[in-house]
Amino acid sequence: MSEAGPLSLGQLSVWHDIRGLPAQRWHEPNNAAAWPLPRGVTAEQVRTAVRTLANRHPSLRTRYDVRNADAPGQLPPDATTDDTLPVLDDADADPADLATELAGEPFHLGRQHGWRARLLTRSGAPSHLLFSKHHITADAWAQELLHQEFRQALTDPEGLGPAPPGPADLAAEQYGPAGLRRQSAALDHWTHLLAHAPSTTLPRTADTAGEVVQATLRSTAARPAAHALAERARVSVSSVILAAYARSVARICGADALLVQLMSANRFAGRWKGVVTSMNQWVPALVEHARNDDLVTLADAVHWSGLGAFRHGMHDVTAVAALRARMPHAAEPACAFNYVAVPDGPHPGAPPRPPLSAGPPTLTWEEPFTTIGPRCYARALETEDALAVRLTAKDLGREQCADLLWDLHQSLLTAAERP
Image: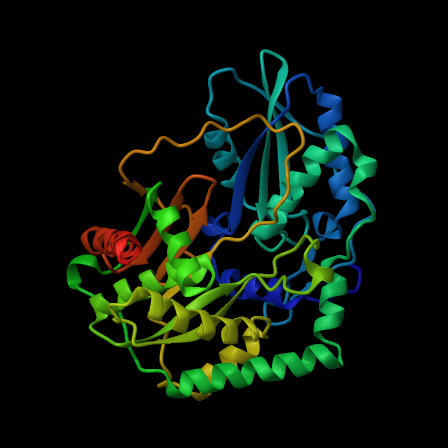
């Protein structure tokens, strides 16, 4: 086996979360997508586009040396990858269901590249590309980047421009002198917050012990409300949604201050916006006066606390784990929040998507694909016409999960209606 280099800090975070999973749960770090194909595209065009992506991004040709779980590494990218594209012909199946089924197949990171694709055809005509990837290979930003580049490569692969750097290049910078200084500052941030944040936790009951529930609230009204509040507070939309979420959690906890885990995309430097890998990392932020009735004021405070946290988004999770071991009584985050950000840009040839009808908000219960991650995790996603907030909660129960989401929703609408 070739000599492995260090994992980037984002890759290391993924490994830290999955290293102890039993084999029957190895599929849980996977994500799936079903990308519609333009009318008239040929199977050979799809194969060429997939091959172009694999040759362009080192992460798609990378395997990992994980024989020593305490010292994982990434192997040099393989020169080539298996670019065969199996075909599924099914005129009736839901592409999303097929993609989810594909994501249920685990990856063996030591001998497999962390992605796979299938061409879905309908009576022989290409319909969708089913794409599944391991989170260590690509985060949500990188997956959307691949989607955009795939559509570009279908018609004009030369228009993609020069290949971006890979995760090994990122790791080299993160372990260079400047990167080590940033790691030290990040560890100081963790040390300060863990030492000073209050120990606030969501309640647990015997009735909900061991239960994991997941629900998604979708609302056409919540999106303009959040944008109006963001404009009024002069902060980001994500800060507004986080403020509403933190207030709802604080009300359940009966607390005025919360330690919140924020998902940092860590793509603030231009050089790394186009790298396909996982750069996401959890970083703590303290939300004070979390039950403030003035959501605009709370959003402003959340915004500045979040910015301070994101400055320290790149950190060594093994160093943080060692820090926690030295601080056994340090506060645990009460909840976690992720505002999903993806790169802007058109999808050449993408079919138009019908707008979501402006109906009442809906709350849909789902079977969690994965239980990796924090105990109370809200993931906010905006589309052009709606806001969706998915909450995955452990030991909380359906009733409290639903109450939290509806309270978040009502907070946004009520605050937006105020003069």
